[in-house]
Image (cartoon, rainbow over all chains, first blue to last red; front, top):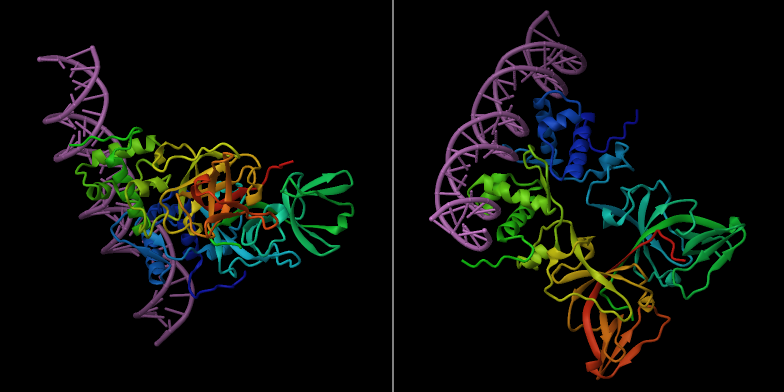
Length: 236
Length: 236
DNA sequence: AATATACACGAACAGGTGTTCTGTGTCAAG
DNA sequence: CTTGACACAGAACACCTGTTCGTGTATATT
């Protein structure tokens, strides 16, 4: 029984209600009624749900509009709570967009990709991306900002935001972030396993591929899912 | 009694209801009831509101859960809504993301940018983009899909989605979609006015700029705001 | 033991809410 | 003119929903 409660108070039922509210809101686009909360949180009486909702409002986790059906809204996104409840991956994909944690910057030599289990709470910034642009499975996703022009052969420029998923291997045709142990460089390339060797194909068709014969030299860090470039400032 | 009905339906009352729904949702965190819509949209009867909600659901602008109070949600926030309703700028607490109309494809020679006043409701597909990635002013925004590899010098590849704003001129440093009347080509370049001539600088720093001396030869179609690339399929 | 407090249950109530039915008026096609 | 589709209003109804009250059960406090 881990007891790492962040805030004082907040029993299991409080957390469960917050979770139900968030999940219901995500799935339906509107908040649940008291009875629906009770049903999903396995609380038989509406007054008990009301009892906890009052406490959650007192603690400023939610806000209520009395006398209005479904008149409640979450004040804190409580993503942390959801994660604490073990809902890291399959969060039921109906929310319109995801806030993807911006985990750092990557450049040519430097390799600052976060560990697969890095703490989502530590990131202070995130990128909002519509779910319609992402795969169904949104687990293990993070984003990095590109620093410098070392990714030009991947058609990726300074300042671009790359959304990727943690992975240790890849299928042919996927774009991966790989580290070449030899020269300790980090690049983004299309991955092709061809017999005993691996071909790393730049996205820019005018550039030549790299061939890697020794598997030990190749270290896959993740798969690229999306590239976002905000234009506006001048580069030169 | 002016009866200026739009070509594809969506009367003033449809738009008004959509506006009320969006505004109410933004302000309260939950959808309005039928009677609240009626009050704000100046419709006295609940059945009339219901009448229009059914039509809006039929047209897939909203989704309804019958028998559930406030059981409705907006499916599109539509940049077009805000635009057509004349609320181009200050709609502070709008939805978190916009559905930007995907207006067509652009390639090397072909130029299929839509007119500035094309009907946003007619487009059947759109791109969902978080407002946090866009400028505050979301008027005159549309998106095109890039066809072919003619934009490689702009670090933009086949299949990329380019979000842009209609414009006839540009400031230095902005990336613009320009048509060169001479050879009737369409390219994306950074714009710099240098004395009497214009320098068109490719985003790819390894490539050389183009200089245009005759202003008549240069036709600005729009400013680029955002580039989105969904990775996953193999290009080669 | 008696009391207080927090938590929980179920029932009843008043008002909110979606639905439906009837009716009215307009307008264009027959 | 008649008809029918459409837009709209109002009222009635059944169900949903939040609130409240009475009651019960632990646990800790006195």
